[in-house]
Length: 234
Length: 234
Image (tube, rainbow over all chains, first blue to last red; front, side):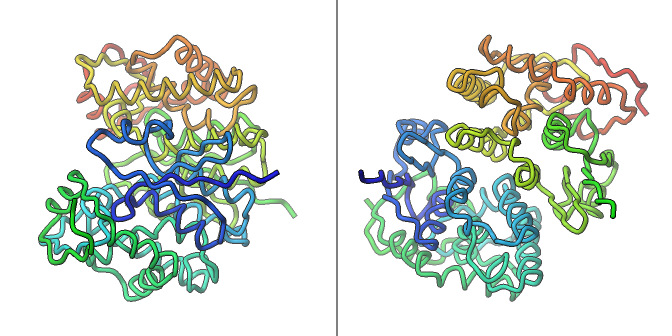
């Protein structure tokens, strides 16, 4: 009997910050899976993703009969079989879950005004204070974790789910250049240097799709400085 | 040696939907804790709650040296010592975590336009379509869980964290009367009948505090039909 492989449904690598989280964790922990990329389309997310995802959103993990349709729930589901997804120390694990859940439920200005678009570079001027305050909170959180657990990752020596939860911020910081502490910038550069992050980034730049809703978010955010995507738009 | 009891910091029972989640779970599972109620004040949440909560938000669980500052992380923290916080069946547990995480990260219209205010009854007219769509999704989710796992709770015969995550919706539905399926309305009535929910509700009605920001949300939502709070405002 051959075990059915895990299937991970994701959207465009250039845009889909939620998809990146379980993808980078599974790649970095070497959990095998079949990637099922479904690009954003002209219809609503419910129309495009609703055939496999009950919330009409990505990512969505399918394990035989079990459908896991939320990024944080996917990580807890994987962690049951792969406990190294979270830090081994109980206090570090509690901290890591808090930080991941705070990201999962908040930071609306960062999400809306600095939407993920791996291939472009944008200047925001002036910076809305509420947006700056959220990046400031993120930087404080990262600095706290790095200081408290000794780095180089947020909750200690190993890459865990809390790093995966902030992985999209590493691309967003590259795109929008928010003011962060040196320690935070070093940490985000370390995330971008991971093999899984480099593979995601290369795929993102090579994608031929341009999704009008996501492109409009970038135009609204500020001045486009560079577009590094290597494939002609289609 | 006496174990330090768990401390759960919460805000006003009339308003604080996030506080209700771990509170009702701990009460219903008979996990002992000291309740530390800090009412919303004139300052920002960071000013009022920042002395004990690193995100400046409630709820916040303190277990000796360990501070757990997010509602979903609190539940995972408790579940490590009390596995009955989630359903015992793996598939039901995956479903429950997805539903709880979907609530944790979404339903912005319900949160903003139907903010929790246990003591009042409000008529919304007309209903914004985006708000109706979110209540429709909630009702579909509840109906799915009740049908699939056999009730009377969302993931089966026991009250678990996923019920705790939707507990604030039971009070919101009582306040705003959204259109829901009969099965969903029965489920929410069952939640409101739990001893822990009745205790929370009685405390909420008796609170003397009125917080202007939360009262304004209710005035913006619709027409006030009833105010059942029993203590004069102060």
